Amino acid sequence: MIEGQNTKNSHGVLGGIIVCVIGIILIFYIISMFSSKDESSSNTYENKYDVSTTEGSIESSIVDYIYGHSDLFDDTEIVNLTINADAGTDASDDYVVLLYPKWSRQNSKQTTSEMMRLYCDDLASFASSLPTDIHELTVFWTIPYYNEDNVSAKCSYERIGDKLTLDKSSTSGLVELNQ
Image: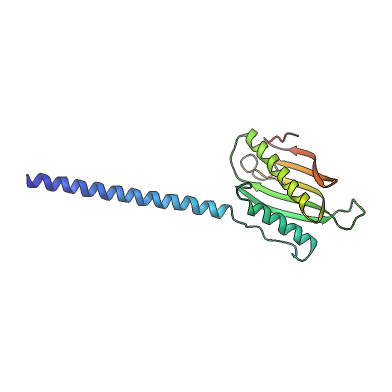
């Protein structure tokens, strides 16, 4: 009987070790999931404009807004952001903003379309609220899930009164933006 008990105890100890090893592996897996999520949503954009200029203020505001609202702009990375004086108006303080974000989430065509319009409309609303007069905003989305190298969706907004209003949207590839 003593011999059988030793075998039982050794199986119990071995089972306990296996459970511990599996638990440790799961813990490391969960930690790595959260670590990679944080790294992918961090601000990797490097500002191009001096923050003391109007262009730098606009750039900083937009970058801070996108990276500061990770709940809304989850999986969004700013690839490029250009701010130019608007040569199409007589006012010296009108600006055109060209934003090139990349969205790395994999969704259906319909969900992607809805999210891109939501993001564009939200960005236009935010840009309208800035103290600087942004006369035009164009957002060129790259969505690698549909088209790795090219712009997949574009939304253009023009200032009418106090708001930036959708002027036109266009798409390439599989994403369709509803107007």
